Image (tube, rainbow, N blue to C red; front, side, top):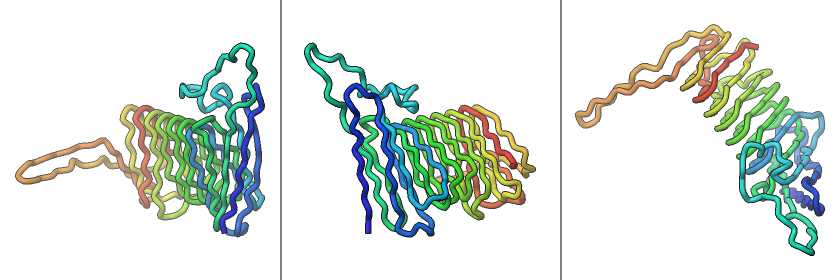
Length: 271
């Protein structure tokens, strides 16, 4: 059975923000869950706690109150002059909907209208599928299989366990692992920003690394080799291609971990 909770954040006349908190019960609190969040504008901050519900705090505001939108002009929100003799009744309402089915919690907002920051507390054993377009993502203390992305914003993932597929366009990726899930590939990709990842000392991986305009650093002992020229023949045509990927085996090798950026350094650290 699917449980549905909907909140409507009504912004009082003249106010630039509104705040609300809801608790979403889980069908099986003692089993692994999954959180799915996708929005357009606003930060997403997720942390583990000892409870058995998903606690969602939504903070909504205008462009002036949106930390994630400082460097972006979205155009549709602006200060309006009040016509002579008129008074403003209220701004447009901001909606957040959270649904739960079989321990999967889905969170949806109308953040395309107004930026909404989400502060979410979940049990530690949760899988994440989280994305925002204009905003940062911060996660702390979660153990699971994670897909985390932004477009204009950094990703900061602390004290993580499991595996991570992460990407952004404009922002750094900073990750540190307490433990990893064996034999799971991972990916850490940005265009503009550093990629800085810390692994347990005993991690086994095949690192696939490429930084177009930066440097690659590590304190792991790696057996390093560069990609070899690829030769193809097609209908008598002969083609040779060379790319700048660098490969390195950590502790004898293992699943492929991809590290890639264009502007910025790649740093692979040993805990």
